[in-house]
Image 1 (cartoon, chains in turn purple, brown):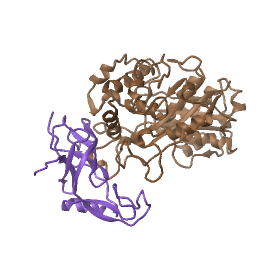
Image 2 (cartoon, one colour; image 1 turned 90 degrees about the horizontal axis):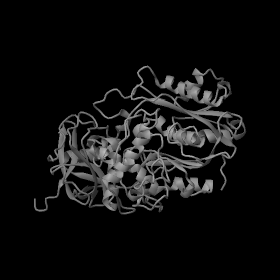
Image 3 (cartoon, helix red, strand yellow; image 1 turned 135 degrees about the vertical axis):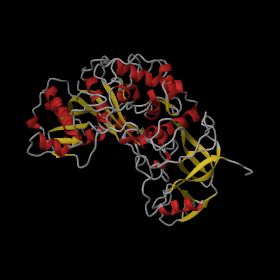
Length: 142
Length: 387
């Protein structure tokens, strides 16, 4: 099977909110930001107005080390729109700091993704307007 | 517990023509076809309608020339709209309520997936997610945790597609027979789902007619009771990771894995029944795996055992728990919204002995469901014969 590549076309992106703009700005700097709520000690993603655990609205942005584990994955052969090149691999990644996010897996064979696979973040400028955090195989000594 | 709907009846249900495309129809025309068809099948006069629920309520009230009606405040359909209508009758807000849903002319740009399957959310849309992928991520995790196999998923799809093949009103009538291997041989869409593991897209309309039990008993068709129902949602549509283990944060409860359990337990408690009392399972089948998950969530088998449960003919038309007997979203129709209501309609037809294909003999209790894990909601309704 082919090696999974990042997208390079005009993939759709929804407009950021006042809350999420910080996250997307971080991506452009190469930082994976997540919310940390001191009241509960919990990490949270997607960014939200309050903590699901403590219901507190007091949080700080922290920078994730970008290391995680594939929780689930799906190699997609029928694209959402023609802007996407197939195959691409949608995944839910468990970040080591204790939150989950949706992303794509790149840089490995499309037949070699598995639940429990260690991955690390890599930022790709998909087009002029959009820099996405993707995940690729963990290169321990890189 | 007794149902607050003990004096409410479903008098009839009607499907318009369903097709991959209905080029001469509009949302409103197909919705009106559905309403008038449901009225005709029961013999209830359009002039007696004083409640319109579901989609396009205002348009329907106006087009029918009614002097006014109780309606849904916002778009709703399927089980939740039937509940709205039943509540309105039980509370005295109306006496004859039609629940309607129709769709035509929406899916024209076929290079993309259907517009209603594509999210508009910054956390999922740039990664190429759409409905199939959302549900695939749930199924893949179930396969990882419990060893559920592609063959088990394919057995569900083959069963439902064969039901549709046998149904002359289905969009995919006479397309079968299908074996599980046929499903596995279809092209991969989003692993683990092959094309034939997935719902189709189509156009069409559906209406369900409710009134008082006393009035329904005067019509040509047997009255159907709402024995119980339940609604269960854990999050919004297509924004958060569709994580099999997603749970509430502070209050213990079933995770997304068992989404719909709260609804099923409530419905069974209201009805005074349990899964063993169900004669036919008119479950919502957006993807093959969701049938496996629903049998687990609704308590027909234990979590992780759904893959084995669907083998050996248990869910076939002659099995102990016949599933989605009209062909469902995979083979009967799936037109954005009406397919939700069509699960209820099929349950009604089973209990009225109106099914042209795969009528379950002596069916007394039908369980209908809507939604699914990837969409973060699962609703259920238990229907029963009047006698």
